[in-house]
Length: 487
Ligand SMILES: Cc1ncc(COP(=O)(O)O)c(C=O)c1O
Image (cartoon, rainbow, N blue to C red):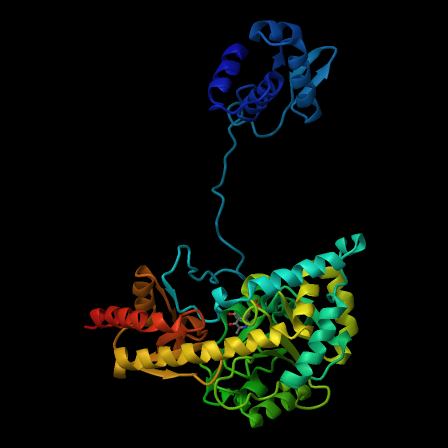
């Protein structure tokens, strides 16, 4: 092998990348060894000879050989520098390669949903808050105060349950606003509900255990449960929320029951008190845990909200999950779990092993935000804003769609659900809308059972991030798209 040629052709391939001669020689030889151009057992020239030939300093050649030897590409001894066998030399010994399969684990396969990859003109994305209304200046100040408070020791791994200031602020807030009964030991800060679901699934259930999910229901919950290898059981939903039949309890008793009682996601019903009590009683009888995802109860537009299931009775078998993704902003990635007293020690121990906590400044800033009243003020303002945005969307839907849609789920939250009364598939409508810069979500995408995928046909339309003065034009555009698709 002509090493001078190898060296100069490598130099030409550098495309202006500036590296030392020693580095250049090292990389040229390493690549040639890996590609099989310099097969195992090839003797390289002595460094003095090579340096002369390449017109480089001898030290450069020596250092390049030394590095290659350290990394196992060369054996250097008194007998000279010999190329080692590195197992990937395709030229000298062709190795049959099987194509690397992009097949994911069976647990995870089938979870890929389309996510926006380009800017969207109007996002009806459910759950997306009004980001441009967030009180950035106040938050910046809270973050700055938090960093001033921190000491060097706070830069290490934090307590696996989260910072006590935030946990205590949550105990006080949840008691008053959601009727949640807990003390600080029961509260665990997480990176958001997705992480809470993932942790609950892994800590409380074994592979193959049954988890009941609302159908239609939250895809994020299904993803977490599938990821933990649980067996998902589809439970229907009606106007009173999740509606398990007697046969579900007798034939498919659950280990976990996932519910969104305050505002069923995505249909919007509120779980009736009778069903709440029944689910708590049956869960107790079956040794099951109820996972209560209280994701948007802060935004109630009509009537007063039901208190959380967790606080309906003493020591309910309920793990209460909350998130700041809607009330603050999704990128904050702070949520929390309130576990029953009997689980708090085990959770503390286990979380210390399977997860790591940090970001004390964010948590302290959030505690400060809650304590100072800034959080409540922000919520009050957003409640008013979202109420107005909801009305604007409802009016526009009525005006531009008329009988084509039946709208429901408007009492609370940040989205409406609309049944499509036309011979069109919701997925096709949403795909056409997306190509025109509107992001709505098909209801059928929330379904698990095939029968439901066929039965539910509609649009989930978030309104929290759609300004009042943009709603009409966006809905008119959406209606035009739908009408153009009608047979
Ligand atoms: C039903 C439900 N739960 C929870 C969340 C929030 O999850 P996270 O805290 O992971 O952002 C969402 C977000 O859209 C949701 O729709």
